[in-house]
Length: 138
Image (cartoon, rainbow, N blue to C red):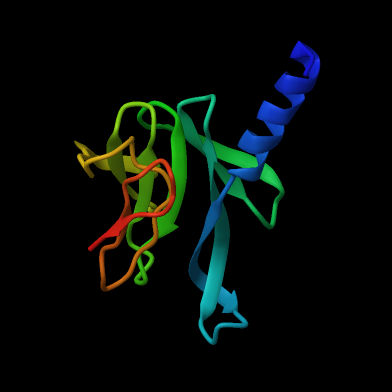
């Protein structure tokens, strides 16, 4: 495989990793039954060591949040009061307040394997710690 082909393949892998969580707050009707003032998307920038905050209705960049190295996964709490980010490069998890777009904390994560990758918010913690993708621990 040529260097150019390998580079394109690698970019494709990183582009496929972009994940967005949406925040909804306050004043117009929503299909979810509530009022919506603004909708923002939080998009991880694996190569940029941060999260871009996108104003979805306006279609513009609304800010950038510096996180740990190589942010990869992002998820939102059910109440919409916290955004969680996994930073694969330095093995940390960041908690961000969506109302201020500031990091509350970035804590080291030791799941027993490689750095944290994707994440989800739920009642049960299941971590995939094997690079072979065939082992889970609860």
